[in-house]
Image (cartoon, rainbow, N blue to C red):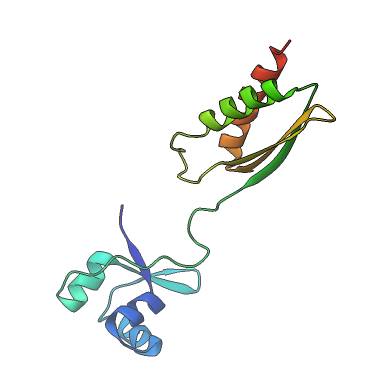
Amino acid sequence: MAQYYSVEQVAELLGLHVRTVRGYIRDGRLAATRIGKQYRIARADLEAFTGAPAAPPAPVPGAGPRRAEVSAVVRIENVDRAAADRLSTAVLAAIAGPREGGWPLHVETVHDEERETLRLVVLGDPADTAALLGIVHTMTSSMH
């Protein structure tokens, strides 16, 4: 896939002022494509202009992949200490492997012995959280 640079990125890479880079584009010395009101310079065109390999363009703030995070609290009733330990261990084992998105899934467990409830506090990627909630659903629906 072709890599493109903004005028600002080219100016920074070459140690030039943004107006100077725009002037090179206007004069036809640096090939660029106009997209809306902005120019984009292909990596090959920048390399032809400088006569040297160009560094990959720096990421533009806010242009990278968006990250969504879910927070969920699951309250499970009628859970004694032994069942709470089994559920907590199973949940923590389920999240121990690597995540597809690379973001960790964080789970905290809180058992209230007096009320016989277990709370799972889950923070993480929506897909990973949904998968974990499916596991919790399966485990709790099969509890006696």
